[in-house]
Image (cartoon, rainbow, N blue to C red; front, top):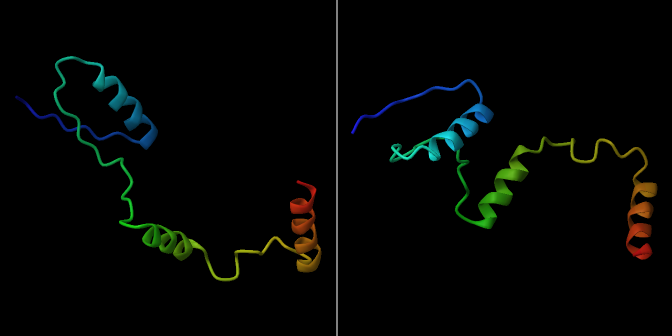
Length: 79
């Protein structure tokens, strides 16, 4: 058996190439580094998401917090 290593310019092209290779009968094994590393628990996943949010940027598009809350509540009552 022979090993072939390929570097591709984008993840999209890597996914397309992987799909192509999966349909070739003599290709026995495909390894890639495309799969995202998943957190071990739901807590770790939430923690990583919250760590990506910059302080002060969560509600920076809300001009008037009182009106924003009122509209949010009205949406729940309309359902």
